[in-house]
Amino acid sequence: MTDSGKNAILIIIGNEVLSGKTVDKNGVFLTRELRALGVEVQRVVIIPDDIDLIAEEIRTSRGRFDLIFTCGGIGPTHDDVTLAGIALGLGKALIRHPKLIEMIEQHYPPDDLAAQGRLAEVPEGTELIFSEGIRFPVLCFESIYIFPGIPELLVSKFEAIKERFRDRPFYLTKIYLAEKEYVIAETLRDVLKDYPDLLLGSYPKLHHPEHSLMLTLESKDRAYLEAAGENLIGRIPKEKIVKIDRGKSAGDS
Amino acid sequence: MTDSGKNAILIIIGNEVLSGKTVDKNGVFLTRELRALGVEVQRVVIIPDDIDLIAEEIRTSRGRFDLIFTCGGIGPTHDDVTLAGIALGLGKALIRHPKLIEMIEQHYPPDDLAAQGRLAEVPEGTELIFSEGIRFPVLCFESIYIFPGIPELLVSKFEAIKERFRDRPFYLTKIYLAEKEYVIAETLRDVLKDYPDLLLGSYPKLHHPEHSLMLTLESKDRAYLEAAGENLIGRIPKEKIVKIDRGKSAGDS
Image 1 (spheres, rainbow over the protein chains, first blue to last red):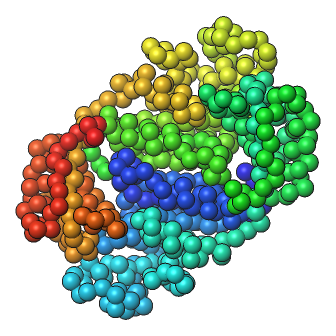
Image 2: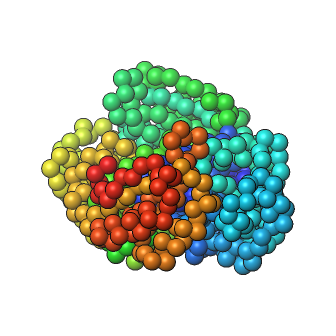
Image 3: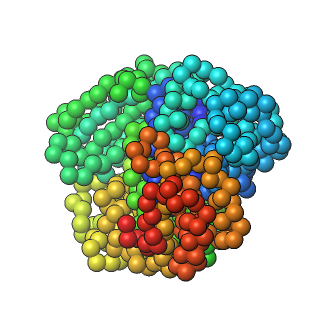
């Protein structure tokens, strides 16, 4: 996992996920989308709606990852403490952003200004990213992108700004085998001696009618991937190879 | 999230999850099962197949959580480094367990003893938990339970030993409302002043035909939950309440 592109951490914030009431969709979506853009997600954490824990996560992630994405906890209720947690982690004050107050006053009826005012609270220095297709801007502080927890809103906000994250793509070859994993383990080690930078995965599949093992080979260097793939294929008895999907960009599939 | 039962961290280990090739099922399964058993999952992390990162995670989690579950990375190939990582994090040697060697020799044909031997490697002091319904034991070191990444195997192993994790159950009331979240935000704060130990969540739902908000109230103390529920219901106009699901154990649904 040491390719030279941008890396990222996803911080999923929500008691509802940790208590099993909701299955996280946002982390799954962002993981796939970022990979397709050439960004390597190196860590995903799911943490509670807790100011101190959010602050701790921001502190330990800043400087360690190129991109930090938070999902969830930016609504108006007591359990929406993500922005307070990020502010604490950054050592910044939580302020009401004049532009956000203006937008909220325009778009919402004045039922409860106290709760609506909370929607304008951001760490001092937060950037607002406006884009086509989204009514409210994405919040960003340095390389920290702050997304809502509601999947529909997260998707539309991410789609609106995703091109800024694009990096060189990953290329992926999949080799499906009718072979036991422990029989081929030594062969895989030998390939990695010749191609140490290859991202090589081995995944047994139980009860599949055709293959019992899937190998994944990945690299941002297409020629390197092709050479490593040929090297590996040359070491495996032909009758054990069920299917090969060669050299696609991870964003294609 | 400060109820007095047992808490847990789930450490999901696998490049295939971080690269978006596989959607994690194990974390979702364990989160729900543990909640139903009365155990509070406080943190989930997804990390790569990397010895040092696994060791770091074990070091920071030990002492901080009552139960630690790892999923994935215990097969025979180069990317199966979970046991080496746990050993490093514990400061223990990685040894070949005599009982595991004996079992592997009995169950597997002697195609490749080197790779099979790796399947017997565990941190020194690892306990083997045998149980009905599983052919191979669950590996355990103190409160660290080491599960495979293949979902079918993980499920059967967890089912075989889950009763040892059982704690007092959580009780859950769900209240569905036709109301905007920001309108009710202040009411929820007031309820929490009277019932500070209530686990109270507020989740807007877009485009639902009947309700626009779901409130979740939880406690291990059933009487406390009921009192808090009545207090909250008393503060909301009746015509805004769509449905109430009262006081079930989290394991019932």
